[in-house]
Image (spheres, helix red, strand yellow):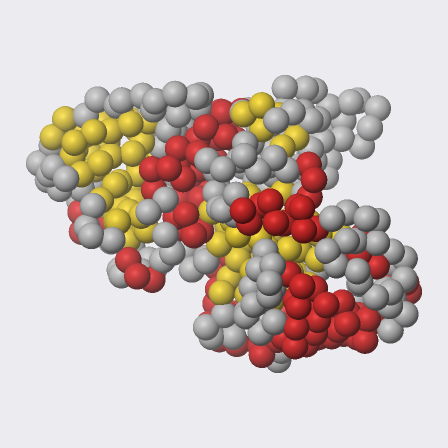
Length: 426
């Protein structure tokens, strides 16, 4: 049995006011891709979608080509796609990707980007007749573009978006403070352009190693920069762009039933188990809910069960729910109308317990062991009296299993593992 003095549990870094954090349903999002997405299947997961929207689909190889919305140059009908999602109750963030477009393909980068941004915002923006897209990202991970090249395109497209629909939120590409990885741009790419963006965007994966294993770790692992990258961007925002939102638009875990092909570059690649994927995704969302993060989009919606990087990150496998699907759906259903209010327990390598409050006062506590193996330990949660029911995060369809607990002083005692437990209080 573990007993931890209440006074030692106070975590000053976390906000004390519920109003400072978004509702869980406003935090949670899902990365999707155009016509492959099945809107009805994923409604239990979230209401925020992030779509990878290729600019080249709209313009073809000629970036100066006038757009013909709602049709793309390749004849994809965006009105059917985004219109269907909006009708189903989703809010769409369009990530306009030009990452694979060669830099010399742009006829006039600033001019072409501005024209495209204005046309896009006028047609799809929240002020238009078809208010299907509420935010747009200027690039995803434009690794092949220099800082100067990206900045010129960003500035042009952002000015066009502002002119097309001032209500449309503008989101940067993936950025990082310090020396960023190859997929992110340094802060100098957008520094001084605060009038032209509303959201700073970051990608973070729980990587323990890079090539050749691409091995990932549990989200609370102090030896990886998974959470620190976000914290550092929050600090930069507070110093240089006060009032701007921070969105984590990519995070996730690969989980497959297959072994890597020994004849490929992924022969030493390592994934996680289906159970770990479910546990670590939900724990990640819980951790993000306590940070200055306004939105967190999970990567990815579906996969084809392939043993290579980012190829088994779906919460469905060939559109059949994985354990992570059920776990995330339960999180969304249970805490959707609640927001993080405080950390009751936050032990390094040990018990975590977060309090979530619904407007009106109802409380739910979520607790877990922040370890890789998730080994169990009986733990006292100092959550006061009045606990009515405790249930464990489900990994299959059906009702979540009940967890036995007993009153212990000003709290409850129960068995904690790496699988989150939800405790309802009167």
